Length: 103
Image (cartoon, rainbow, N blue to C red; front, side, top):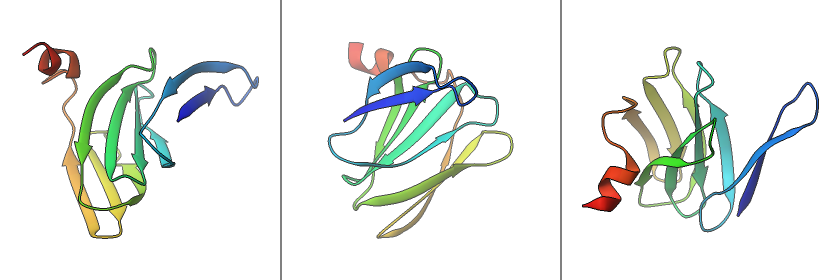
């Protein structure tokens, strides 16, 4: 699914990226504005670099997801879905998706 990110003040499309294999149910921006988190119907949580639209982290759960929310300092992501609540610690730069793909 193509997911555009818009600047609310001007209506300018900042970037468009491909997210999830199906429906994106929710998107949230981290408190510092550097990261986007999306959750989808297929049970995936994705973390994106907001400046480039590139994926940095992908996690899967065992059921459809409904919503997500960052905590105040952007170090934890809470995700809710059909099977319950998931909490993820987030430490940018600790492991990158590109590093995992090169192994």
